[in-house]
Image (cartoon, rainbow, N blue to C red; front, side):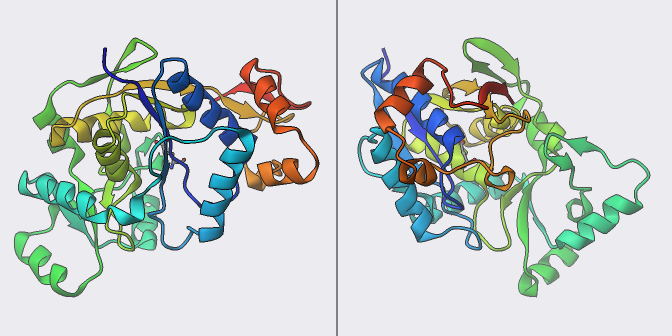
Length: 289
Ligand code: GLU
């Protein structure tokens, strides 16, 4: 049987809260129950939002909870050349194109269109730069900031029907719903989707245990795996923790951070034991997503 490898892959853009603890615990226990490895990957590719103090916070919080990761901690910011190689392969297949649009160009175009199709993450990119002529593309590439997008219709047609497994239930991928997703941002040489697909393969992750908020995004990851010839892990999307108002836990909704709980005298062993049996602090429940 293949060795089980799971990972917890937070972005260091804030301190962890109870929802993160729950996710990390499930990934940790999934591996531990199968004598597997539990990895920590810091998804620090957003230059504007990542902060070193949050990286330190993540590591400290996991240790406080007793969820010690195995092996080396992997930092995506140190792996940019791997993502660049993957992007290059997609370009060579004619599946990626440069996009010069600003956020406001995209918003204007969407506002002006009679029917702006929506995907799981909101209105989808209208495809403005997909149809630029080769000449215009070459000219603008020389001196304009640009992102790279996946031509999702072409890529899906090339890959054919794709499936992935969520807790042993087969799911048919429909990545077209997302439109032409970003593969490399203007301000970062990769995107979440590309980096996660590359890294889950590079780290031999066998089982991706993560929140249901990323269920739909798995369709995009599955497509990238097919295009790049990467192995397909098993997925286990768990329900999200919600607060008394039924909202997903988030800092903006006032969710206390693990650092707050620690400072308030919470016993981490008891917290973890309670989370394991779904006994959440008053006001919280498992269920969203
Ligand atoms: N970095 C992502 C986040 O913090 C999670 C990535 C993943 O688990 O695939 O939401």
